[in-house]
Image 1 (cartoon, rainbow over the protein chains, first blue to last red):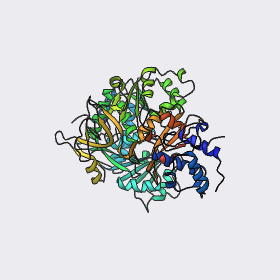
Image 2 (cartoon, one colour):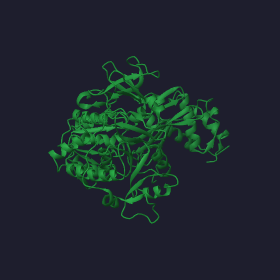
Image 3 (cartoon, rainbow over the protein chains, first blue to last red):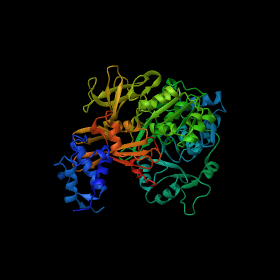
Image 4 (cartoon, rainbow over the protein chains, first blue to last red):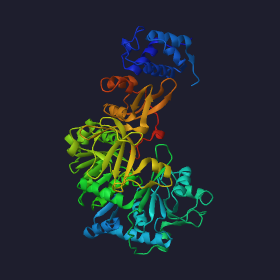
Length: 83
Length: 521
């Protein structure tokens, strides 16, 4: 567990995809609503993990598609990185 | 035999002896003084035992002295070898032996590079030179005998007269060093008559005359910057070099000297246009602007052509070909500046990996045939064989440029990128130039450089280094939004890194000097 906040997480996603943070909910689908392709989801994963200095196996990100699921993955499995 | 460079310069000097040939900072040299000075320095080189095909190194920044030394070597049939004055020990200890330089003319320092000190550290253990002529008042105490000051060289070795060498048809004019995109320098053997004819043809195509004044932002030691200036001086005009780009100084200089021809890159042009009070400067004397080195967006070209009434020439070419294919607003104004056409005196073909011509509409590598195509990469027969193809029909040479183009129905060539700058993102190929061109149209982006970064999952990801206008904050999200509808989604940069500045000393992006932007708040 780590203390990543939902607000910060949402803002970081907004910074990456260009959709207003207010429009992002736990139910938002990264493919349908954020227009990312599968490679883009990897890019998003890298952006988030670098931003919050967390490590998460990239393969884990590939299995989910809702923002809330990514958030929970990060909170539960994200470990602080060295940097 | 056709006319030599010195026949032409001498004609210009007789016609207009006091005409300024070259102006750098506040130093100038007239056509007459150029003929006299090159005779002096050339006679000194002769006294030192330098003659036909000997190599003379120049490790100096842009200066009138650089120009005189360069042409003095040519005057006696020797080959000048211009070397980037930023070069340090590692570069010089490789480049000087590789180009077989015998004597060297060197400035004391350039920016923070102490050139003479670097040479002192290398000679004689790691490097041999017969003479090092130093542009400094007094030599360091420990300097070996082969070091002399420029004034001792003038007083001890130089006379007043020196006839000029008339070369054979296949004579090499100079060795031009390019940094090479891999960091390993390439040394080009530039053909004497071929380069002369091509630069003369280009000057004629653009109607350069002795009334023209040209300002160049590239450096003299860069073959492209040197060649552009030569197009003007062969016609008897004046050339100014201003490699340190300061937008206000640039605009003031145009006004002051009533400059008629300028050279810019897209990035520099954007900086120039954003200068406060840009509209208050009188640029009405400028009739031609050369663009090279970067993608030129149509929007930007249009500002020059339609608003400022300046003819725009956008070129793709390389040091290896000298003349190239161009987009010329006077001829091609209606199409995008990435659609190029050959010049009346150049020839092109588009080939595949097996050197066969590809059908219309397919992407292939651009091959260019000009008089100036280099005869070889000096000391590198393998690379020469790979890139230079002899044309048996006329004895000229084709050069495989590494530029990818697509030939259109009307014969135009659409630039598709550098074969070396392709980013392999997952299953897609992305041309860095195309992404840069789109970024450059963003109002809050002053400059952009796109490159590939290895990524564990997708192979390579697209990284965009962005120099924002002022302190604008630009996120990847904003760029994704901006790209929406302009380019395919897979071409949106995966990572956006704001940087202080995108250094482009010689027109190409210098990725190694990029520094992350620090925001004040």
